[in-house]
Structures are given as structure tokens and as C-alpha cells.
Amino acid sequence: MSAVTKTETHTARERHRCSWCWQHINAGERYKRYRYFGADTGTVKAHEECYDAIMEAAEEEGGWVEWTPGQERPEKEEK
Image (cartoon, rainbow, N blue to C red; front, side, top):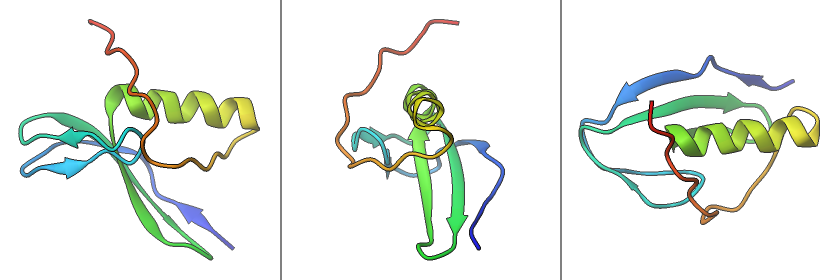
């Protein structure tokens, strides 16, 4: 059995690596984070636009997607 936590939005207090594009998430930047448990356990931290790309890819794949870090970072939409 596997489980995924609710996605949370955080403001980085230190530099992290984005799980999608592998670029830095710098201190002060907002990012999305969720954790997963099961056969594999880990934490996904992603720029907000990269998180949207993850969710879009998951929708296309039927709900779940695996990827290799280093994907192209999407353009950030101005809000």
C-alpha cells in the first residue's frame, strides 16, 4: 500500500533543488512539497510552475507519473 501527503506551499528558508527541473529553489521563493510512502519513500519539492507540469503529466498518464530530474522548467505565468 502506498500513500501521498497533501501538497503544501512553502517559502524556502534555505536553498533546495527542484525535483522536476533540478534548478535551485532559492531562499525566499515559494515552492510546492509533498511526500510519498510505499515501496519507495521520498519528498518532492518543486517550483510552483514545475509542480503544475508534474500534475499535467500525471493527468496525461492517468494519475501518476515518474520522471528524471532535469526536465525543462516551464515558463512562470504572471498572476
